[in-house]
Structure formats: structure tokens, C-alpha cells
Amino acid sequence: MRLSLNQRAALLSVLLLIAGLLAWEVSIAAGGGGGAELTEYEKLTGGGAPKAGVPPPSQVLGKAWEQLSNPFYDAGPNDKGIGIQIGYSIYRVLAGYALAALVAIPLGFLIGMSPVAYRALNPFIQVLRPISPLAWMPLALFIIQDSEASAVFVIFICSIWPMLINTAFGVAGVRQDWVNVARTHELGPLRTAFTVILPAAAPTIVTGMRISIGIAWLVIVAAEMLVGGTGIGYYVWNEWNNLDLTSVIFSILMIGVVGMALDAAFGVLQRAVAYAE
Amino acid sequence: MKAFLSVENLTQRYPDGRGGSTTVFEDASFGIERGEFVCILGHSGCGKSTIMNILAGLAEPTSGVVVMDGAQVSGPSLDRGVVFQNYSLLPWLSALRNVTFAVAARYPGWSKAQVQAESRKYLEMVGLSGEVVHRKPSQLSGGMRQRVSIARAFANHPKLLLLDEPFGALDALTRGTIQDELLKIWAGTGQTVFMITHDIDEAILLADRILLMSNGPMARVAESVEITIPRPRERTAIVTHPNYYAIRNHLVQFLGQRSREMAGRPGGGAPETVRIDLTGGDSEEPDARRGLRAIP
Ligand SMILES: Nc1ncnc2c1ncn2[C@@H]1O[C@H](COP(=O)(O)OP(=O)(O)O)[C@@H](O)[C@H]1O
Ligand SMILES: [Mg+2]
Image (cartoon, rainbow over all chains, first blue to last red):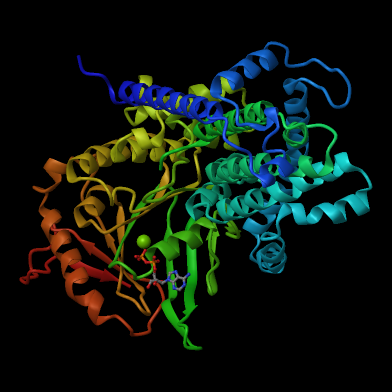
């Protein structure tokens, strides 16, 4: 029997996963059982504390089961379920992201349509774009005076650039023949924008949106480590302070899974707006 | 009396990048009557597409005016439909949606069902019906794509239909079939058509009159050749018509030699009308250009 390419790849993925988990489990069992002498440094830094060891995968899976079977419990400010924490993070990402889209897409349209606007705004974009979004954090905290809103602002500022640039690029690159089709059919500027330019530029715009959501999800973890309180980034930091490495590893995995899901959603959107010439 | 479409002293110059300017064509003037099918023949780069874009209102000439049906052309209009060589369909819409897009723009008051019915009617006229109309342009052959473009253009009932080398990218067999379809649909609608082509046989088959352009720069619309072959025309039958080879030779001779000789020389104004008719012409003229008369 011949397996298809996809089946073979899936089989290999599963084998790699099992091999990786086994290697992890075995290496910890071997290292942990050795009972080596602790150095002075290890004693000082807490390396000798019983909870500080890297947990084996079986323990992480146990943690995952425990957390995922009751993801939304709320037992005070420092003890909330993983579902609630992720919920906060997703809420901040989507809020900042939506605001960024509301600014970036119309502005990108303007820049793409008008060479003057492009030249006028280009220097600002070139200077602002390379700034690490977290560098804005102190300024945001000072001006906005609210850690929650500051985190949303940081997401806003990091997701705006790929969307802005891709929208401008996509709109500027729309084939003149298609614009001429709109003109010879006497479509007004708004109808032209929505029925011709937007669908023509949509693949490029959505690519920018997909890049943006990926960056936003990268940045929210760091932002929440800084502002604290709630969210998956805060959760990771908090568990590190508790020296609960099992929870740290589990939440790292969850960050990956949510990021993958966000990216997949935009992958679906990308396929929906794609067209072949 | 002015012609239905009157092109008056059209001049187009572009900056040549060295501070000066090059003249693509100068003082081009010609007219087209209502219901006429006119082809324009000329070498690549002489300015045919530029003229067409000006007629469509998509481009502004350096000087000169175009008057259609008593009104000066300024900007594009639903009264002038355009079929480009490529890329005139919107690739994210199905064939049918490409046509309904145009019909809905033309008749904003119509219901969805009316728009659909009208669009399907015109698609059927060019031989497209059934599942095919729901395909995207990328899933259609080149010939089918141009059929959709033609259906879209005719469905809009423009006062003037402009075609820029619509069959240039098609193989000879497909081209033949679509030419026949175009003739049929044109005969049924009495549409005024202005078509650019570089195919002499295509022009003779389709046109009432062929405008000949000399080479650029400083191109001019030099001659207006009447096609004195009666309709309905059949591609297999017209080659046996006595006028066919005389007209064809005249065109070949112009494009092969005289268009080059005229290049770069100013001299605008109306094209010289050429009428070649060997049927029942006076037999006293002995030379090969028997029956050729220039009407000033
Ligand atoms: N925007 C432009 N700027 C400068 N030159 C142009 C421009 N558009 C067309 N031309 C020149 O005008 C001439 C005529 O072009 P075109 O009308 O496309 O020719 P045709 O359709 O007969 O092949 C060409 O030599 C071309 O290089
Ligand atoms: Mg051309």
C-alpha cells in the first residue's frame, strides 16, 4: 500500500513528536535521579529548590489536562484559569488590531491612490516603522495613564505598519485596465473603491493583515509581562515568579496554539479573497 | 453635416525625456457614421491605442477635439464601450458577474432578475451558456474571455463600441470563430464600431471602411479605404470576390511601403478616400490600379 504525501508527512510528524517527548522524559528521569551535589551558585539562585527542575512532559500533560478541564475558574487576581488569561490577551490584541485596521486601511488607500500623499507620508512611516512597539510603552503609560489602554495602544502601533504598507502597495498596484473598466462604466469614486480597487488589492491587503496579527500576538506577551495584572503574558511571568515551570511550559504551548489559530483564520480569509489573473 | 463621430485635428505629443517632445501624431481628422464598422490599421507604435483612448475619454489629447453625436467628448462615458486586448475582465468575478456588473451600471433601475436575464442573453449570443458562465476568467480559454468582453460591451448598448486589437492574443482558428460571432451580433444590433487591428484579412472581413495610419513619429491617418464587398460576408466566399485581392494588395502595399515613406513628414487633415471597385468598372483603364479612384 502506498501512502499519499500528506499521510506520510502526518505519520512522520507523529513519530517526531513521540521521539521528542520520549527523549525529554528520559533525559529528565536520568538527570533528576542522579542526585548530584549542588554548587554554591545553584543553592543561591534556587537551582536546588525541588520545584525549580525542568518538568517532564508527562507532568506538563497533567497540568494541561487540569487547566483545560476548567479553563475559566477565577479564584482572585493571581489565580485565574488559562482560558480567562488567554481571553484577556485576545481581547487586547483584537481591540488594538481593529483600531489599527480602521486607521491603516483607509489611510493606505489614500496613500496608494495619491502620489502626493505617498511622498508626504513616506518619511514618517520610514521613521516610525522600525521602532520596537515596546519602546512606546513608557510614553503610552505616561500619556494614557492606564496600563490596560497602554497595552492596546502598543498592539495598535505594532499592527498598523504591515497593514498600512500593504494596503498602499496593493492599491497602487491595481491594474490600470481594471480602473479603466470602472471609468468607462461611469462608476463613482466610492463604487470604484469598493467594487474594483478593494477586491483587486484584497490579496495584498489581507497578507498585510496576516503579518500584523502575527506581530500583534508576539508583542502582546511581552506587553503583558510589562503591564501585569491579566493576560497570558502576565500569566507566564507570574508562574515564573512562582517557579512553577510546568505552568510556564504549558502556557508557552498555549501561546503557540492560539497564535497558530489566529494565523489560520487569516489564512482562510486570504484564500477567500485570492484570484488568479 | 458633421459625421456622427467627428475627430478634429487630434495631436498627441509626449515629452521625450530630453526637454523636448515627440509627436506621436499630428492633426489627425476623420469621421465615422452611425452604424458604421470602421477598422484602423497601422504598424505597432503609430498611435492607434492612443487615438482609441482619446475616443474613449480615458486620455486627453495634446490638442484637438472629438465630437460624438453633437457633444464634445470629455472623460469616459457609458456611451462609449471599450474592449481591450487583455485584462478587461475583472478576474475575481465570474463571467456572468462581469457582464451583470456592466448591465447594472448601465441600467441602475433594473431588478436583479432583469439584469441577470439581459446578461445571460448576451452571453448566449456569443455562445456561452450553462455552467461556463459561472467560471472565473482564469478558468476560461483566451477565446472565451474575449467572448465575455464582447458580450459585456454589446449588452451595454454604447453609442460607440471601441475595440483595441481584441483578437490579437488568440490563435487563428479561435479568432475566425469569434470574428464570425462579432459580425453576427453587429449585424443584429447596428452598433457603431471602431476597431484596431493589425490583421489585414480581419479588417477586410469586418469593416465597412479601413483607416490606414502611417508610421510614427508624426503618424497620420493617411487613407480611408472603402471595402466594396457586399454583406453578409463569408470568410471563404469573400476571397473569390473580384475586389478582394485588389483591396488586399492596396493595403499590403501601404503597410509594407508607403506607411514607411510617409513617416516623420508632417501633413495632417482628412484622409484621402480610396474606393477600389472592379465590378462593372469602366474597362478603359489598362493598368493594375484599374478602378482605383481618389475622391478628394
Ligand atoms: N504615456 C506615454 N508617454 C510617452 N510616450 C507614450 C505614452 N503612451 C504612448 N507613448 C508612445 O506613443 C506611441 C504610440 O503608442 P500606441 O498608441 O500604444 O501605439 P499602437 O497602439 O499603435 O501600437 C508609441 O511610440 C509610444 O511609445
Ligand atoms: Mg496598441
